[in-house]
Amino acid sequence: MSKVELNKKVKNFKLAATGEQNITLTSLKGQNVVLYFYPKDSTPGCTQEGLDFQASLAKFKRQNTIILGISRDSIRSHEKFKNTQKYKFDLLSDEEEVLCTQFDVIKMKNMYGKKVRGIERSTFLIDVNGKLRNEWRKVKVAGHVDDVLAAVKALNKAKLSRT
Image 1 (tube, rainbow, N blue to C red):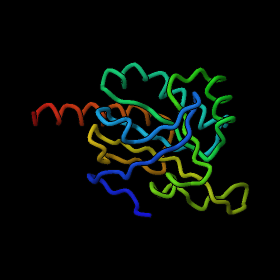
Image 2 (cartoon, helix red, strand yellow):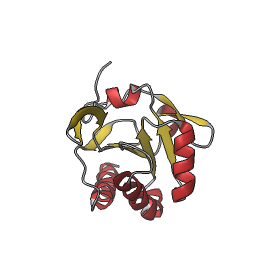
Image 3 (tube, rainbow, N blue to C red):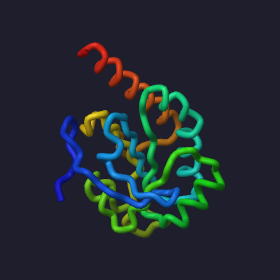
Image 4 (cartoon, rainbow, N blue to C red):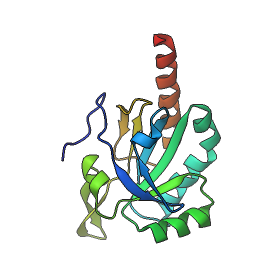
């Protein structure tokens, strides 16, 4: 499977999502899409990252941008996590690591001195035409959502100046 590249179209995908739905990239055309990959539901860093996106959700919506969280957790786990935290955006389940592989976010990590395969916290910005416009890898949660929002605003401003 080909990996994503900046300024290239992202291959369409279809994943199960919260709310008993399947989400495809093509169904989101016409909106900017922020895909944020996180290691595990209901862990402190992942919860805070989701809460930060939730706190800025209205700002992203005003920028014609949808937020989607992705991990390898099951839909059942995602539903519980989403409901507990009152997230107003969907979470996608990638148990088969299809999207994780496409975006190259599975890495060897140290967990209590033991090597394990896991998701490296990463975020990707896809424009209204399905092209990858920005990526953040090895994300630190603090301040990250502000950086993503600034990139979305810059992308929209650049699009306006071209029209």
